[in-house]
Length: 248
Ligand SMILES: [Zn+2]
Image (cartoon, rainbow, N blue to C red; front, side, top):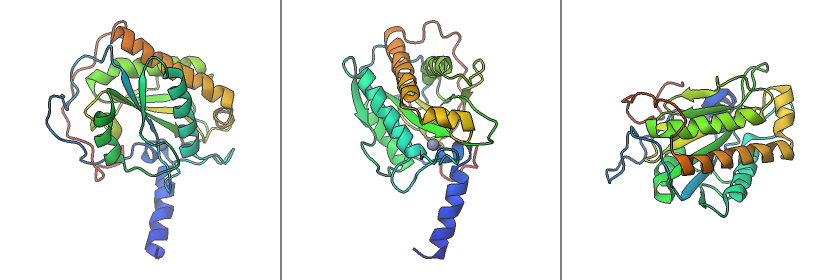
């Protein structure tokens, strides 16, 4: 590639390192299509579902965030966690993997493919930002994803020593929270830019506890739907997230 490619790559890696720019970055048209699914997702959350789509964030030439503390790449940690969640869900659910190895999959492709593969989508990421910030965060947009997101955040927060209360549950329109035609949640398991949390995230035992917490939330949602999750948020009508959106 020419120098422009190099410049763009440097720029993208800088952008990618910061908060959600790396993860869910603004987003594309994606799926669209009609069918019987409610593309807005303004309905109660899922219950009794059987097929879970697990999306390991980034991959291939897109490494996501890279920890200055441990040197690990977000794409590798995400794939590791997704495999652990798959094992934990194993017998009671059918699990579909968005990527099996270190390969790049476009965000719009992920969004469109999700509904073809299963009933709910979990996209797994690790975060990056100021070195003082830590704790897991869960992003959702659709009403039908709220209960699942709340369960996931609650369970991850119980594992993380850095989480304080429920500040990590965030409603945000991203390509993987708005565009898939199924309930969809984007998880940030921790900040690779925080020294202590970066070391935790490099620990296999910690990632396993996180994976169990995530799998348990999925099982709880399948068994109980939104029961116990409180009042659902109001619908917000907004178009699909596109690559040209301003970073959020
Ligand atoms: Zn990410």
